[in-house]
Each structure stands twice: as C-alpha cells, then as structure tokens.
Length: 195
Image 1: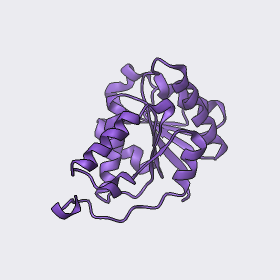
Image 2: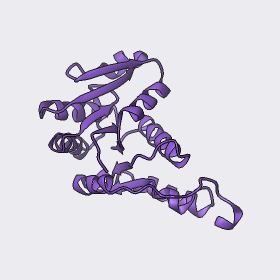
Image 3: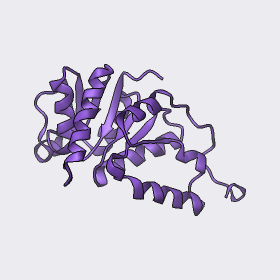
C-alpha cells in the first residue's frame, strides 16, 4: 500500500516518561526518511509538538488541522507547511481523515482515544479502508487491547474487526504493517450465531 500522507493522533501532553517524547521524535524522523507527509492536530505542545517539530527539523512537510477555539489552548505550531483552521472537533477529524492515506495513534488521553475509535468505527462501517495503527510505546495501550478482547469475548465486537487495528511496539514494525495492510472482509453486524 502506498502511503504519501499519514494522520497521527497523539497527546497534547507529553506524559511523565521521556520515552514517549523520544518515540514521537523518532517517528517524525522516520516519516521524513520515508517521504511521508504528516497530518496532525496543529498544536505545538505535548507529543503533538514534539512530532511536528521533528518532521519540520528534518525537512519534512506537516499539515496541521486545528479548531479555532483551540488555537490559544493548544498553541498553534508556527513552523508548519500549512495550518488549516476548522470550526469543530468533528470537522477536524473529518479533514485529517480526508487528507491522509492512513492513521497512527501514539499515547494520549481522551481526545486521542476519541480520534482513534472514530477512525476505527468509520473503517468498521466501510466509510474508509485506510490502515489504522497504534504505536504501543512501552506497553501504553496494553490495557486497551485487553479491553478490546473483552468486547469480543462478551459479543460486542467480532474478532475480525480487531484486525482493523494494527499494533506494533516499534516504529519499523509499525511501518511494515501499515504498508502490508489488507482490509478485513466482513459485515459489521454481529448475529447470535457469530458469538
């Protein structure tokens, strides 16, 4: 699969451990090395800022998408290739999806999870067929992955729908999975006989 632009969802905070910032920086370097443009939330704070600055400092292109009401709270990055302002959070997610060929989630909070799960839901409903991946830095997403298994075990999610989410613990494996992604073929709806 050819990926020219990738959306990355991640925290507007950096977390307590330096490993998160280090991986955001390394991901930025990898994007530039692969000639992939970054689409992200437009801020210059937290992992968002580290990632965008890494891409910019290494000569890559970055498009930020920021709602007007967040430009003061998240502090718009001033060195981007392009910064697009939108009115709502939904428009932000829609624009980021439309501009990209795939999605990566790094550690973050509620906003990151909201963005990740909206992209997964859209994929599950057949609204897009882009690869969606999480970089599971230092096991950050382990508990979330266990909860997804609980959803399957309790009959709220099909096992094949879990395949919509690519998981990697390191950046090279992440890119290998993104580039080799095959869309799972299934209906969304679960029937009694499926569980």
